[in-house]
Length: 164
Image (cartoon, rainbow, N blue to C red; front, side, top):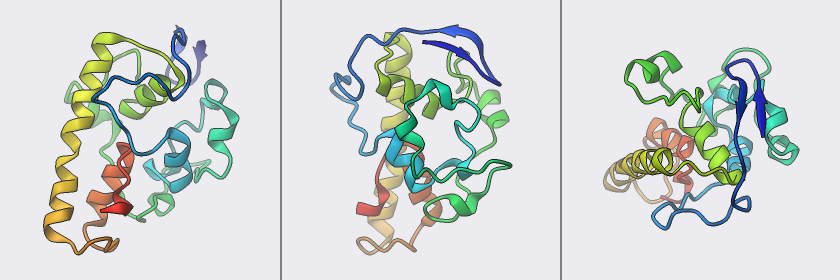
């Protein structure tokens, strides 16, 4: 795969696993990238300028914003994202995936493997699950109006917070 988009030029990677299969054993996302885009994540702004890299089917029914981020497109209708600059300042961005975790997940899902980076990102994914614990502790089961920002954040990390 060769990537030439707004944030990355001439980046090349290989798909060495079948799409959606052979994940590391401790990585069990509850949502696929397609499901996440269809539900509404990242204010509809994620991947809007790099669609050629990903399957067309991922964008069928996706809640996307052609202009600026629109948090109303998020499943829970709230803004649950830090700006990319914050992620960069905290050192959470690897240059191979300049858009962050979701870009890494999309590429991992397609079959790219980068062992060291995969382990780092999966550790971050596992750490975000603490938000599910807060929802379980403070909300009635499946009360989707309780802790909407935390629920949206979980969706951004492929956890289906609608089931908590």
